[in-house]
Length: 100
Image 1 (cartoon, one colour):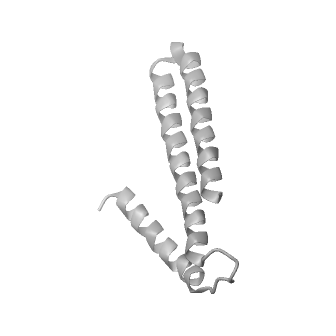
Image 2 (image 1 turned 45 degrees about the vertical axis):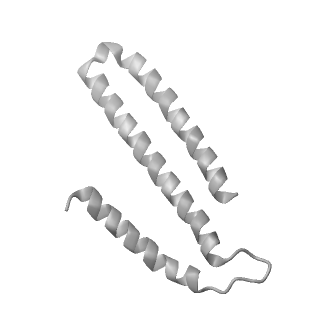
């Protein structure tokens, strides 16, 4: 089993352990059911993890490209900043949708 599969399995186990109190809680008559409330926060967690992975992969590739060709480091850095801003913008939009 590779490293990513182990991390995903551990993360799923942690989510299931933390979900037990949320799913067992009684919802008030005028409030959302507990499962719907949990799904909002689960979506936020997935969004943040995806954005962190994307920006980390972007920075890793950019630094590798800058180390291979130092003469174009300025262009690579500019492209990296623009791409990171687009990823963050999409992340904020996804967070807004998850919490709505």
